[in-house]
Image (cartoon, rainbow, N blue to C red; front, side):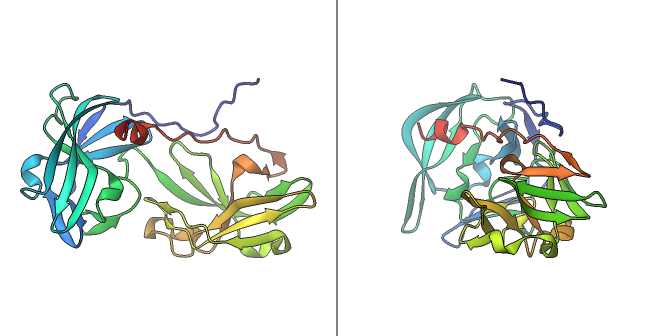
Length: 267
């Protein structure tokens, strides 16, 4: 099998890397403040993005109950914690880093993202996971033509696009809706979130003459302010379609692999 070489920059941060977080980090559960710190640290459990490490002194007293259970994560041992707040109980909501953790995070606590109802960096809410300081996301207008095909059917043929270039991910090509063949597009109820782009406003499956492919295209009608050039435009998964740029067929990117740290935490 031919080895696939990505044509985009990869992640550069090694697992176990620790850095200070130069932002105020707050977390709320059941509408109550759980932690508030200006001394958080990042730790990378995989190269894609970091986790926050919160100093114990900056966590509300009495909300974490040790489960007397030790786990081994990718960079060290941790003790699992239950979050108890009023009538709320969330087992496995957090873990406290042991003495063998990377320098700077021993004794600190990391929370499972979904165990906290609302995360804030300064006064802006953050979704999905912490934003990596080493990830860059650019939205660039491009006059290079983009054609999208599948099973011989033309799904889109646009004279221009907005290219979204995000560290560690294939380039995405966002197209004006007027250049899509909507007769082949069926809306779905799928919604996804991105810490850099926001929440999707639409997903579409695609039907060709031979098959139907679920959730092949998406749009952000109200992206984050940094990505406003893609508002209302539609992108397709390069991994699943034949995409031509200026008439040249681009190789399909390899599927992006997600880290297994969450499975390790729940082991």
